[in-house]
Image 1 (cartoon, rainbow, N blue to C red):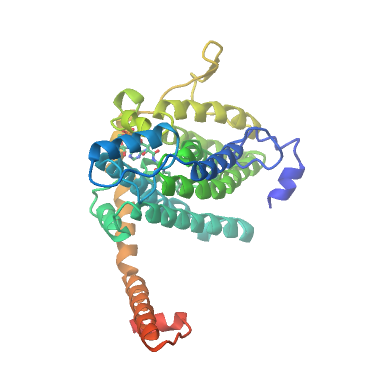
Image 2 (image 1 turned 120 degrees about the vertical axis):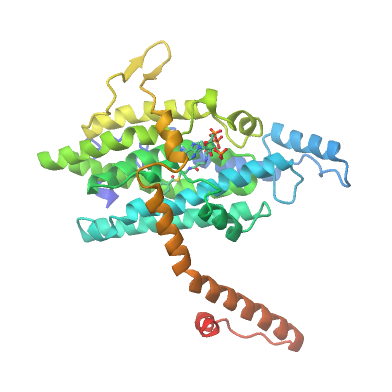
Length: 385
Ligand code: BYC
């Protein structure tokens, strides 16, 4: 689907929309490639072995040296408890966001305007599920299980991104989510590819590569609508009006009120502050909105020559805090749906566990008798019945 768009470079100069596939230098995708190269290099360089024994001071010094040298901390390495907890909090919150984030878009799978649009949206929503799984797997390397994390979400003791508590009212919202929400997510996530924790950085590289299509598909939906009938154009503008400020809020509270930024940046989990990334996102969107022929709903948006950046109206951070604390337009609905899906999916988890147990038992028996047998998926269902 993207080929004809790429071929018509004149009308689709997306001005560094992420995942640009026609040669704009220094795109966000290039930054992901660079992060991947840096990761491979880090794996080759040698800071010497971590000190043995129980000397916490020596271990802390080694940890600090690894961070200072921009190397990666791996699951086997010693790490301060605060570092581990911060990573679990952030990675789990991110994983939950991917899973809850399937709901607003899933709402439109049956109503996508064509078979092609439906197939694309279905693939995108499936990608989000996969991203959730990579992230839960990364969190598990820190000594916590996926079940524990899911329970914490269901008990309301862990968060997910504020953005998924807003409703998707029209088809254009799917375009706005792709362009703005995935766009904001990517601006936030590309630096996480350089996060100091190896499994998180590796998961983010894979996620960002897959996200490259997500923003493009949203942008293309909006481009089609904004160049369609007056009613379609109006629908696209209305969606952008509603999603702009919630997307700006995704980057979190302002730096002055961000509780974790300073420490997370010192540990190189986060590489940029919330406000820096928010600014980067605004600067990226202005040119893209012009190409779309849509207006960003901010009368104060203007280029500041001195700062070499756009001035803009910040989102309502009071609203962000209300949404985070459970009082957004769709919080209750999202959590109720997740709880229902979790309980209706119990049989799948039980079947998978029964299958894993059977495989483990057979492997043990096989080792004892020197035999090995084929694994069949049907065994899982038979085992669960
Ligand atoms: N929503 O000290 P701060 C996606 C919380 S999924 C909710 O600045 P930090 C997609 C924060 O947790 C995109 N809570 O925190 C999926 C903290 O509370 P706690 C998800 C928020 O961690 C499907 C408190 O406010 N992306 O792309 O340094 C379909 C103070 O904040 C929010 C990620 O998760 C928020 N917006 O920075 C389509 C990226 N903002 O935990 C798309 C990874 C702040 O102390 N996460 N809070 O109770 C991050 O980069 C960082 O965690 C954040 C916040 C920038 C979000």
